[in-house]
Image (cartoon, rainbow, N blue to C red):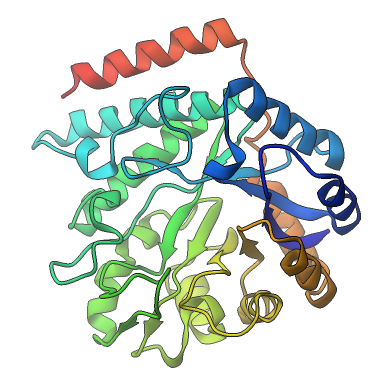
Amino acid sequence: MLPVIFGLSGTTLTADEQAFFKTAEPAGFILFARNVDHQAQLRALTDALRTLTGRDRLPILIDQEGGRIARLTPPHWRAWPSAAVLAQGQDDARALERVKCNYEALGLELVAMGINVTCAPVLDVPQPDAHDIIGDRAFATDPDRAAALGRACLDGLHLAGVEGVIKHIPGHGRAQSDSHQSLPRVSVGNDALQWDCQPFVALADAAIAMTAHVVFDAWDSQHCASVSARVIGEQIRQQIGFKGLLISDDLDMKALAGDIPSRAVAVLAAGCDIALNCWGRLDDMQGIAEQVPAMTPETARRLEVATQRCGVFTDSAALTARINALIARRDALQ
């Protein structure tokens, strides 16, 4: 199996994609708005991916955080609130229950479409002078509250049979630029960075995490976290204590240098378990397949653990009733 998650080009698998994916055997797939039209189409696409791979617990990912980061949108799917909106209010117990209800409902909507992993929660702790790429995607500016609400998010997703991805480890909250467009550099010292790490330490038992394409000068001034063996080994694995499946952020982001296959090689060499290639360009995917090593036994073990909750599908009528009840419960907790 290839230690890569690939994107798709459109709303159906092309013949070339089918042939390539059958041979390459990627770890999983990620979907974007370009892959989505309506419910029947999307469920047919995810069913086709499982049929092609022969894997019932095949991880099929999506960025469905809520708020401005949502790939499934009205009119065919519900609009979900952002993390910051869900976290509003002074009553932490109500906020925790509200978050849990919301993400169970969101997860059930994904399950109905055959999607079993969502790239949430965002555990970054935004700073006042940071770029707004994180902003209201984060639950809180206090790390303890961010951790508690992030845990409630994961708990809700798990009740739906969906796995979450904590991101962007070890923390994107101080970045003063958007890593989609440029390479952020954070120059504060180690003590300040430990503040940013706190939510990730608290949720270090999560099954999946996604790295930050951010340079942390105090740890490695030459490489961003995603391609830094030092940051991954010393900070993410040792200090934070994360033992689960570590996925890079998207290889196509401008924070990284070099061609796409070389970026995949770099993140894996640094210690990521999985390279994430989102854009579904067949030439890039073929180049990656030619250059990256086969999946290691340790990554295969982590992938198996990370997909234990995946592949649970519920009768659609009962599922819709459950989603509506959860949304009503969430709204009553405002």
